[in-house]
Length: 171
Image (tube, rainbow, N blue to C red; front, top):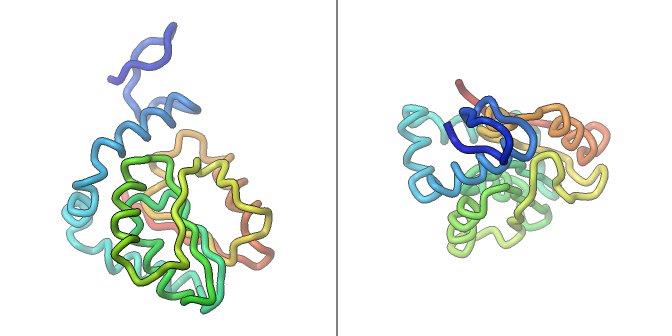
């Protein structure tokens, strides 16, 4: 397993919680950021693109909506949401991993969606205002979160009344 903070014994990453889990996940995704898109295609047998399209459709997102993609990774879901909301909307992609955000930022520089912004944040502390989002999306995130209750609370906090939460994951 990975070494955790002093005074504790080593534990596999999936057994960690709190800040130990957060550091483990950040290091893991920083390490796989560049090949992540290809790995996701292989692991999902190429279905990940369709799953994102279905998630955007199921979210009921409309032109002009505000969307938070929490745990945006390399940005693919955030870009799909940005195209759906159009220039009158706003999409914020948030991720814990600087490596994943670096890949997403490179994609963003070559994209046609300037109304998308990318920021480093924890899923349990997004920094977004209360009731800001019409939609919160999440792709392949919850399986990596050590303490889900604070993440669900944050999603509820940033969603507007009547807002929608859509989540893609697999195991």
